Image (cartoon, rainbow, N blue to C red):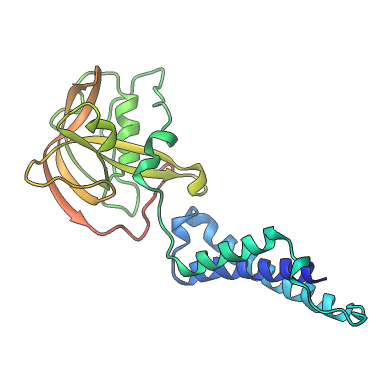
Amino acid sequence: MFANLLRSMGGILVCGYILLLASRDQLGFYTHPRYHQFAVIISIVGVALFLIDIMLQFKSRQPLNGSVFNLRRIKVSSYLAIIILTIGYTLPPKTLSPSSLTQRENPAIIEAESRCEIPKPTENSSTISINRWKTAMNSCKQASYFDNKDITITGFVSNDLLKNYGYDYFYIARYVISCCAVDSVPVKIVVEKNFSVDYPDGTWLIVKGKLSQKVINGQAEYVITQPNITKISQPKYPYELMGI
């Protein structure tokens, strides 16, 4: 019985943690906004069902015949779950780190037919996401089509990949999610370094400049040149959404 009670209480803690994240408007660290309301509803229902389960367990409890509560009856996995949940409640949520860029990166999808056009902001937005810029670049086979085009993007710094080659560039990157952080895919654009400041990995920036196609590590890449860089705090919603 004690193990069953512990599982039910653990379920309440999990659901409660989701509701806590929702109350702090932090579910965006883990899931796409379209699933936030669903997660809240399911968590509320889960808390109610787990409470009912606990009540039924107490109601059907058999006499203990003098035996007392024994911690040895509880499995090690239950202790681990309690520790993990405690850490989750204590520590603030964090986004995926820049070190995950290489492991999560997928090859660029090149369309069979070339389609060259400057991306436009989506409805109710005044900015163009990194994802939309990269999609437009990968769809266009015309060399230097985007040269001298103005670009303004927001993302975090990733130096490691380019630092290995000794280039004077860094990546401005963002994770794109379609459902949750687990399925996230990084997108990134090369930025010409401003030698007055060297930004460490994970620093969030707004970068304004002009695009220019250059050859980096034997591959043609669009680079943001003459960058005007503004350091910012991590956005409230750090991920870009698929298709936006």
